[in-house]
Length: 186
Image (cartoon, rainbow, N blue to C red):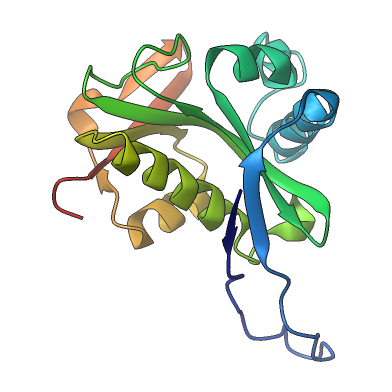
């Protein structure tokens, strides 16, 4: 279990000042949380307009137990509540779609809208970076949809670089762009 400080943001105009941000704790998801993680992931992707409710991908988003069995399913906790989740895919994980043999990947990063801006997404990505570094890997990769602008800004602020030569489409009409973090340089 790793604790990360929350990212302090200035209050919204007209909003009352809030008490200091809660720290974000990142840890492996427990089996009794898989259903909640699956629903959270579907909520973020479908309600956020990223995936159609009719998409076959919704089943994969909901199946957190499968992610936990084939990758490392991590959750971000804020104030004792699950605020987000990600699948960290070490080498050999069947969830890895573009990572090479000396690379890891992360997938299905989801942070509840109510928790955005508080550091949960950043903490989940940092935990993936830490896991890849501890494993001595050369890089950490990810794919993201073109319309996931907030996530792309986060990745770029964290040092990930675009890799347009690896962009791809898992199905017609879904174009994914890719990023990598060179762990030998960062």
